[in-house]
Amino acid sequence: MKRNLWIINDYAGSPTYGMSYRHYHLAKELQKNHCDVTIVSASYSHFLKRLPRTKGQFTHQKVDGVDFLWVRTLHYGKAHDPRRVVKWFQFALLVLWLPFSGLRRPDQILVSPTAVFPAVTAWLVARLLGAKLIFEVRDIWPLTLVELGGYTWGHPFILLISLAERFALRHSDAVISNLPSYATYLKSLGIDRPVTIIPNGVSLSEMAAAEPLSPSTTQRLPQGKFVVGYAGTLGHANALGVLLEAARLLKDEPEVEFVLVGQGKDGDDLRQSAHDLPQVHFLPPVPKGQVQALLATFSVCYLGLPRRRVFEYGVSPNKLYDYMYSRRPVLFGVATELDEVKLSGCGLSVEPESATAVAEGIRTFLQLSPQARDEMGNRGHEYVLHHHDYAKLAQSLDEVLN
Image 1: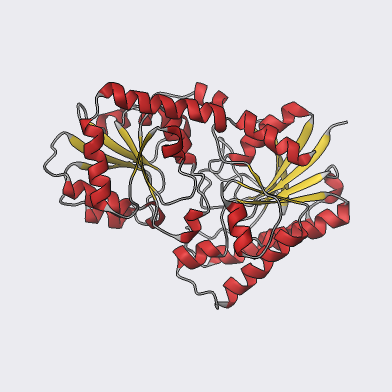
Image 2 (image 1 turned 90 degrees about the vertical axis):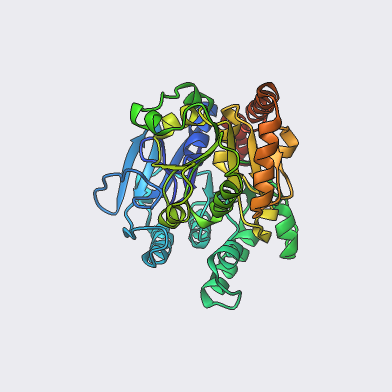
Protein backbone atom coordinates (compact mmCIF):
# COMPACT_ATOMS: atom_id res chain seq x y z
CA MET A 1 0.00 0.00 0.00
CA LYS A 2 1.23 3.47 -0.86
CA ARG A 3 2.08 5.84 1.96
CA ASN A 4 0.36 9.21 1.92
CA LEU A 5 2.12 12.51 2.63
CA TRP A 6 0.71 16.00 2.96
CA ILE A 7 3.12 18.89 2.47
CA ILE A 8 1.79 22.13 3.95
CA ASN A 9 3.62 25.20 2.64
CA ASP A 10 1.73 28.38 1.77
CA TYR A 11 4.52 29.38 -0.66
CA ALA A 12 4.77 26.13 -2.63
CA GLY A 13 4.73 26.52 -6.40
CA SER A 14 5.60 24.66 -9.57
CA PRO A 15 7.09 25.32 -13.02
CA THR A 16 3.58 26.18 -14.24
CA TYR A 17 2.88 28.79 -11.56
CA GLY A 18 6.31 29.91 -10.52
CA MET A 19 8.41 29.91 -7.40
CA SER A 20 9.14 28.10 -5.23
CA TYR A 21 9.93 24.65 -6.58
CA ARG A 22 11.47 22.63 -3.71
CA HIS A 23 8.40 20.67 -2.65
CA TYR A 24 7.15 20.20 -6.19
CA HIS A 25 10.42 18.47 -7.16
CA LEU A 26 10.53 16.42 -3.96
CA ALA A 27 6.92 15.33 -4.54
CA LYS A 28 7.68 14.27 -8.12
CA GLU A 29 10.51 12.07 -6.89
CA LEU A 30 8.63 10.63 -3.89
CA GLN A 31 5.78 9.59 -6.16
CA LYS A 32 8.22 7.25 -7.89
CA ASN A 33 8.79 5.50 -4.54
CA HIS A 34 5.25 4.37 -3.64
CA CYS A 35 4.28 7.60 -1.89
CA ASP A 36 1.23 9.70 -2.73
CA VAL A 37 1.80 13.40 -2.10
CA THR A 38 -0.63 16.30 -1.75
CA ILE A 39 0.81 19.82 -1.53
CA VAL A 40 -1.36 22.27 0.42
CA SER A 41 -0.49 25.80 -0.65
CA ALA A 42 -1.99 29.29 -0.69
CA SER A 43 -3.72 30.54 -3.81
CA TYR A 44 -1.74 33.78 -3.61
CA SER A 45 1.86 34.68 -2.84
CA HIS A 46 4.15 37.35 -4.27
CA PHE A 47 6.42 34.55 -5.54
CA LEU A 48 3.83 33.14 -7.94
CA LYS A 49 4.22 34.32 -11.52
CA ARG A 50 0.74 33.08 -12.37
CA LEU A 51 -2.17 32.56 -9.99
CA PRO A 52 -4.24 29.36 -9.91
CA ARG A 53 -7.95 29.59 -10.56
CA THR A 54 -9.90 28.69 -7.45
CA LYS A 55 -13.54 27.74 -6.90
CA GLY A 56 -14.58 28.13 -3.32
CA GLN A 57 -12.29 28.06 -0.31
CA PHE A 58 -10.40 24.92 -1.39
CA THR A 59 -9.54 23.81 -4.92
CA HIS A 60 -8.01 20.48 -5.93
CA GLN A 61 -5.79 20.56 -9.00
CA LYS A 62 -3.28 18.27 -10.65
CA VAL A 63 -0.28 20.50 -11.44
CA ASP A 64 2.40 19.02 -13.69
CA GLY A 65 1.66 15.58 -12.28
CA VAL A 66 1.48 16.62 -8.60
CA ASP A 67 -1.71 16.96 -6.52
CA PHE A 68 -2.20 20.47 -5.16
CA LEU A 69 -4.86 21.70 -2.78
CA TRP A 70 -5.08 25.46 -3.17
CA VAL A 71 -6.30 27.35 -0.11
CA ARG A 72 -7.88 30.64 -1.13
CA THR A 73 -6.24 33.46 0.78
CA LEU A 74 -5.98 37.23 0.81
CA HIS A 75 -4.19 38.97 -2.08
CA TYR A 76 -1.68 41.18 -0.31
CA GLY A 77 0.28 42.75 -3.18
CA LYS A 78 4.05 42.92 -2.78
CA ALA A 79 6.37 41.30 -0.26
CA HIS A 80 6.34 44.16 2.25
CA ASP A 81 2.59 44.81 2.19
CA PRO A 82 1.26 44.71 5.81
CA ARG A 83 -1.62 42.53 4.62
CA ARG A 84 0.87 39.73 4.12
CA VAL A 85 0.84 39.22 7.90
CA VAL A 86 -2.94 38.81 7.80
CA LYS A 87 -2.50 36.15 5.14
CA TRP A 88 -0.08 34.22 7.38
CA PHE A 89 -2.66 33.94 10.14
CA GLN A 90 -5.46 33.26 7.66
CA PHE A 91 -3.63 30.33 6.07
CA ALA A 92 -2.66 28.89 9.47
CA LEU A 93 -6.29 28.92 10.64
CA LEU A 94 -7.61 27.47 7.39
CA VAL A 95 -5.34 24.45 7.86
CA LEU A 96 -7.81 23.46 10.58
CA TRP A 97 -10.65 23.56 8.04
CA LEU A 98 -9.11 21.53 5.24
CA PRO A 99 -11.66 19.33 3.42
CA PHE A 100 -10.61 16.16 5.23
CA SER A 101 -13.42 14.08 3.72
CA GLY A 102 -12.07 14.80 0.23
CA LEU A 103 -8.46 13.92 1.06
CA ARG A 104 -6.88 10.57 1.74
CA ARG A 105 -5.83 10.35 5.40
CA PRO A 106 -2.11 11.15 5.67
CA ASP A 107 0.50 8.92 7.24
CA GLN A 108 2.76 11.93 7.65
CA ILE A 109 2.34 15.69 7.42
CA LEU A 110 5.36 17.77 6.49
CA VAL A 111 4.76 21.39 7.45
CA SER A 112 7.22 23.88 5.99
CA PRO A 113 6.07 27.38 6.98
CA THR A 114 7.85 30.69 6.77
CA ALA A 115 6.04 32.47 9.58
CA VAL A 116 5.83 29.26 11.71
CA PHE A 117 2.13 29.63 12.67
CA PRO A 118 0.87 26.84 10.35
CA ALA A 119 3.13 24.42 12.25
CA VAL A 120 0.89 24.80 15.31
CA THR A 121 -2.37 24.12 13.46
CA ALA A 122 -0.73 21.33 11.44
CA TRP A 123 0.19 19.67 14.76
CA LEU A 124 -3.48 19.74 15.78
CA VAL A 125 -4.50 18.21 12.43
CA ALA A 126 -1.79 15.54 12.70
CA ARG A 127 -3.01 14.54 16.16
CA LEU A 128 -6.62 14.50 14.98
CA LEU A 129 -5.78 12.24 12.03
CA GLY A 130 -3.20 10.07 13.74
CA ALA A 131 -0.37 11.23 11.46
CA LYS A 132 3.28 11.93 12.23
CA LEU A 133 4.37 15.57 11.97
CA ILE A 134 7.63 16.61 10.31
CA PHE A 135 8.62 20.24 10.90
CA GLU A 136 10.81 21.67 8.15
CA VAL A 137 12.79 24.87 8.61
CA ARG A 138 13.86 26.75 5.49
CA ASP A 139 14.16 30.16 7.13
CA ILE A 140 14.99 30.73 10.80
CA TRP A 141 12.13 32.82 12.09
CA PRO A 142 11.96 35.03 14.07
CA LEU A 143 15.77 35.46 13.89
CA THR A 144 15.55 36.49 10.23
CA LEU A 145 12.98 39.19 11.01
CA VAL A 146 15.13 40.59 13.81
CA GLU A 147 18.38 40.66 11.81
CA LEU A 148 17.02 41.66 8.40
CA GLY A 149 13.61 43.15 9.14
CA GLY A 150 14.55 45.61 11.87
CA TYR A 151 12.35 44.12 14.62
CA THR A 152 13.43 43.92 18.26
CA TRP A 153 13.29 40.76 20.35
CA GLY A 154 10.77 42.42 22.64
CA HIS A 155 8.26 43.14 19.87
CA PRO A 156 4.96 41.31 20.53
CA PHE A 157 4.94 39.82 17.02
CA ILE A 158 8.46 38.44 17.49
CA LEU A 159 7.53 36.98 20.87
CA LEU A 160 4.50 35.28 19.31
CA ILE A 161 6.61 33.75 16.52
CA SER A 162 9.18 32.60 19.10
CA LEU A 163 6.44 30.77 21.02
CA ALA A 164 5.21 29.10 17.81
CA GLU A 165 8.78 28.15 16.85
CA ARG A 166 9.52 26.49 20.19
CA PHE A 167 6.16 24.72 20.16
CA ALA A 168 6.84 23.25 16.71
CA LEU A 169 10.36 22.20 17.65
CA ARG A 170 9.25 20.45 20.84
CA HIS A 171 6.06 18.80 19.57
CA SER A 172 6.97 17.61 16.06
CA ASP A 173 7.94 13.99 15.50
CA ALA A 174 10.94 14.91 13.34
CA VAL A 175 12.80 18.06 12.32
CA ILE A 176 14.40 18.64 8.93
CA SER A 177 16.07 21.71 7.48
CA ASN A 178 17.84 22.84 4.34
CA LEU A 179 20.30 24.83 6.49
CA PRO A 180 23.52 22.82 7.03
CA SER A 181 24.20 24.05 10.59
CA TYR A 182 20.64 24.29 11.86
CA ALA A 183 21.41 21.89 14.73
CA THR A 184 23.88 24.48 16.05
CA TYR A 185 21.06 27.02 16.16
CA LEU A 186 18.86 24.57 18.10
CA LYS A 187 21.59 24.17 20.70
CA SER A 188 21.67 27.97 21.09
CA LEU A 189 17.99 27.67 22.06
CA GLY A 190 18.77 24.93 24.56
CA ILE A 191 17.05 22.31 22.37
CA ASP A 192 19.01 19.12 21.73
CA ARG A 193 17.29 16.94 19.16
CA PRO A 194 18.34 15.33 15.88
CA VAL A 195 17.96 17.27 12.64
CA THR A 196 18.05 15.79 9.16
CA ILE A 197 19.60 18.18 6.63
CA ILE A 198 17.99 18.09 3.20
CA PRO A 199 19.33 21.04 1.17
CA ASN A 200 17.79 22.64 -1.88
CA GLY A 201 18.79 21.24 -5.23
CA VAL A 202 18.22 20.95 -8.94
CA SER A 203 15.97 18.78 -11.07
CA LEU A 204 18.11 17.08 -13.67
CA SER A 205 15.12 16.46 -15.94
CA GLU A 206 14.24 20.14 -15.78
CA MET A 207 17.83 21.12 -16.54
CA ALA A 208 17.89 18.75 -19.52
CA ALA A 209 14.88 20.59 -20.96
CA ALA A 210 16.55 24.01 -20.79
CA GLU A 211 15.43 26.53 -23.41
CA PRO A 212 17.49 29.04 -25.41
CA LEU A 213 17.38 32.72 -24.52
CA SER A 214 14.89 34.88 -26.32
CA PRO A 215 16.41 37.17 -28.99
CA SER A 216 15.27 40.26 -27.03
CA THR A 217 17.34 39.16 -24.02
CA THR A 218 20.36 38.16 -26.10
CA GLN A 219 20.44 41.58 -27.77
CA ARG A 220 20.71 43.33 -24.38
CA LEU A 221 23.65 41.27 -23.13
CA PRO A 222 27.23 42.57 -23.46
CA GLN A 223 29.21 40.91 -26.24
CA GLY A 224 32.90 40.07 -26.07
CA LYS A 225 33.27 41.17 -22.45
CA PHE A 226 34.14 39.58 -19.12
CA VAL A 227 30.66 39.48 -17.61
CA VAL A 228 30.03 39.34 -13.87
CA GLY A 229 26.42 38.23 -13.61
CA TYR A 230 23.68 37.96 -11.01
CA ALA A 231 20.26 36.35 -11.49
CA GLY A 232 17.63 36.60 -8.76
CA THR A 233 15.71 38.99 -6.57
CA LEU A 234 16.87 42.61 -6.53
CA GLY A 235 16.67 42.98 -2.77
CA HIS A 236 18.73 44.25 0.14
CA ALA A 237 19.39 40.73 1.42
CA ASN A 238 21.43 39.90 -1.71
CA ALA A 239 24.17 42.52 -1.14
CA LEU A 240 23.81 43.98 -4.62
CA GLY A 241 24.82 47.44 -3.46
CA VAL A 242 28.20 45.91 -2.64
CA LEU A 243 28.43 44.55 -6.20
CA LEU A 244 27.71 48.01 -7.63
CA GLU A 245 30.39 49.56 -5.44
CA ALA A 246 32.81 46.91 -6.72
CA ALA A 247 31.83 47.91 -10.28
CA ARG A 248 32.75 51.47 -9.40
CA LEU A 249 36.14 50.30 -8.14
CA LEU A 250 36.72 48.44 -11.42
CA LYS A 251 36.15 51.37 -13.77
CA ASP A 252 39.76 50.95 -14.85
CA GLU A 253 38.98 47.46 -16.19
CA PRO A 254 37.14 48.21 -19.47
CA GLU A 255 36.70 44.53 -20.34
CA VAL A 256 34.58 43.91 -17.20
CA GLU A 257 30.82 44.47 -17.37
CA PHE A 258 28.06 43.63 -14.92
CA VAL A 259 24.62 42.16 -15.63
CA LEU A 260 21.88 42.02 -12.98
CA VAL A 261 18.83 40.02 -14.05
CA GLY A 262 15.67 40.09 -11.96
CA GLN A 263 13.21 42.31 -10.18
CA GLY A 264 12.53 43.26 -6.59
CA LYS A 265 11.86 45.94 -4.02
CA ASP A 266 15.30 47.55 -4.39
CA GLY A 267 15.37 47.53 -8.18
CA ASP A 268 14.72 51.25 -8.64
CA ASP A 269 17.25 52.23 -5.95
CA LEU A 270 19.91 50.00 -7.49
CA ARG A 271 19.32 51.45 -10.95
CA GLN A 272 19.58 54.97 -9.54
CA SER A 273 22.80 54.05 -7.73
CA ALA A 274 24.25 52.75 -11.01
CA HIS A 275 23.15 55.69 -13.18
CA ASP A 276 26.79 56.74 -13.73
CA LEU A 277 28.04 53.19 -14.35
CA PRO A 278 27.60 52.42 -18.07
CA GLN A 279 29.23 49.02 -17.55
CA VAL A 280 26.27 47.90 -15.38
CA HIS A 281 23.20 46.49 -17.15
CA PHE A 282 19.80 45.63 -15.66
CA LEU A 283 17.57 43.06 -17.36
CA PRO A 284 14.10 41.81 -16.42
CA PRO A 285 13.70 38.22 -15.17
CA VAL A 286 13.87 35.44 -17.72
CA PRO A 287 11.60 32.36 -17.65
CA LYS A 288 12.86 29.52 -15.45
CA GLY A 289 13.56 27.37 -18.50
CA GLN A 290 15.96 29.99 -19.88
CA VAL A 291 18.05 30.49 -16.73
CA GLN A 292 20.77 28.03 -17.73
CA ALA A 293 21.13 29.67 -21.14
CA LEU A 294 21.43 33.03 -19.38
CA LEU A 295 24.09 31.81 -16.94
CA ALA A 296 26.10 30.38 -19.84
CA THR A 297 26.64 33.97 -21.05
CA PHE A 298 28.27 34.99 -17.75
CA SER A 299 32.00 34.69 -17.09
CA VAL A 300 31.48 34.66 -13.32
CA CYS A 301 28.30 34.38 -11.22
CA TYR A 302 27.95 36.54 -8.09
CA LEU A 303 26.18 35.65 -4.85
CA GLY A 304 26.41 37.79 -1.73
CA LEU A 305 24.61 38.19 1.59
CA PRO A 306 24.98 40.65 4.47
CA ARG A 307 27.08 39.56 7.42
CA ARG A 308 24.39 38.38 9.84
CA ARG A 309 24.29 35.69 12.50
CA VAL A 310 21.31 34.03 10.83
CA PHE A 311 23.46 33.10 7.80
CA GLU A 312 26.15 31.54 9.96
CA TYR A 313 23.80 28.61 10.57
CA GLY A 314 23.93 27.79 6.89
CA VAL A 315 22.46 28.87 3.57
CA SER A 316 20.99 26.83 0.74
CA PRO A 317 20.18 29.35 -2.00
CA ASN A 318 18.64 27.93 -5.14
CA LYS A 319 20.61 30.32 -7.30
CA LEU A 320 23.89 28.86 -6.02
CA TYR A 321 23.00 25.41 -7.35
CA ASP A 322 21.78 26.89 -10.63
CA TYR A 323 25.14 28.68 -10.87
CA MET A 324 27.07 25.51 -10.11
CA TYR A 325 25.10 23.40 -12.57
CA SER A 326 25.82 25.96 -15.33
CA ARG A 327 29.58 25.25 -15.01
CA ARG A 328 30.25 28.92 -14.32
CA PRO A 329 32.70 29.83 -11.52
CA VAL A 330 31.13 31.53 -8.51
CA LEU A 331 32.15 34.64 -6.59
CA PHE A 332 30.73 34.02 -3.11
CA GLY A 333 30.50 36.79 -0.51
CA VAL A 334 28.75 35.01 2.38
CA ALA A 335 29.89 34.31 5.95
CA THR A 336 28.55 30.86 6.75
CA GLU A 337 29.76 27.79 8.61
CA LEU A 338 29.55 25.51 5.57
CA ASP A 339 30.95 27.27 2.49
CA GLU A 340 30.05 25.01 -0.45
CA VAL A 341 31.94 27.18 -2.93
CA LYS A 342 35.16 26.66 -0.99
CA LEU A 343 34.30 23.02 -0.26
CA SER A 344 33.68 22.20 -3.92
CA GLY A 345 36.45 24.42 -5.30
CA CYS A 346 34.01 25.97 -7.78
CA GLY A 347 35.01 29.60 -7.28
CA LEU A 348 36.32 32.21 -4.86
CA SER A 349 34.97 33.11 -1.42
CA VAL A 350 35.50 36.72 -0.33
CA GLU A 351 34.70 38.89 2.65
CA PRO A 352 30.96 39.66 2.75
CA GLU A 353 29.75 43.26 2.48
CA SER A 354 33.16 44.36 1.20
CA ALA A 355 33.20 46.03 -2.20
CA THR A 356 37.00 45.99 -2.11
CA ALA A 357 37.05 42.22 -1.54
CA VAL A 358 34.52 41.66 -4.34
CA ALA A 359 36.54 43.83 -6.73
CA GLU A 360 39.75 41.97 -5.85
CA GLY A 361 37.96 38.67 -6.37
CA ILE A 362 36.92 39.75 -9.86
CA ARG A 363 40.50 40.83 -10.64
CA THR A 364 41.68 37.39 -9.48
CA PHE A 365 39.26 35.72 -11.89
CA LEU A 366 40.52 37.99 -14.68
CA GLN A 367 44.09 36.84 -14.06
CA LEU A 368 43.13 33.16 -14.28
CA SER A 369 43.26 31.40 -17.61
CA PRO A 370 39.95 30.44 -19.25
CA GLN A 371 40.93 26.82 -18.65
CA ALA A 372 41.35 27.42 -14.90
CA ARG A 373 37.94 29.08 -14.72
CA ASP A 374 36.40 26.22 -16.68
CA GLU A 375 37.91 23.72 -14.24
CA MET A 376 36.29 25.62 -11.36
CA GLY A 377 32.94 25.54 -13.14
CA ASN A 378 33.24 21.82 -13.85
CA ARG A 379 33.93 21.11 -10.17
CA GLY A 380 30.75 22.97 -9.22
CA HIS A 381 28.74 20.99 -11.76
CA GLU A 382 29.99 17.66 -10.42
CA TYR A 383 29.36 18.77 -6.84
CA VAL A 384 25.73 19.57 -7.61
CA LEU A 385 25.18 16.24 -9.31
CA HIS A 386 26.53 14.43 -6.26
CA HIS A 387 24.98 16.49 -3.44
CA HIS A 388 22.00 18.42 -4.82
CA ASP A 389 20.12 16.20 -7.25
CA TYR A 390 16.47 16.23 -6.13
CA ALA A 391 16.22 12.50 -6.85
CA LYS A 392 18.87 11.89 -4.16
CA LEU A 393 17.40 14.49 -1.79
CA ALA A 394 14.01 12.80 -2.03
CA GLN A 395 15.65 9.55 -0.93
CA SER A 396 16.87 11.32 2.21
CA LEU A 397 13.35 12.59 2.86
CA ASP A 398 11.94 9.12 2.25
CA GLU A 399 14.21 7.78 4.99
CA VAL A 400 12.75 10.33 7.40
CA LEU A 401 9.22 9.38 6.40
CA ASN A 402 10.00 5.73 7.05
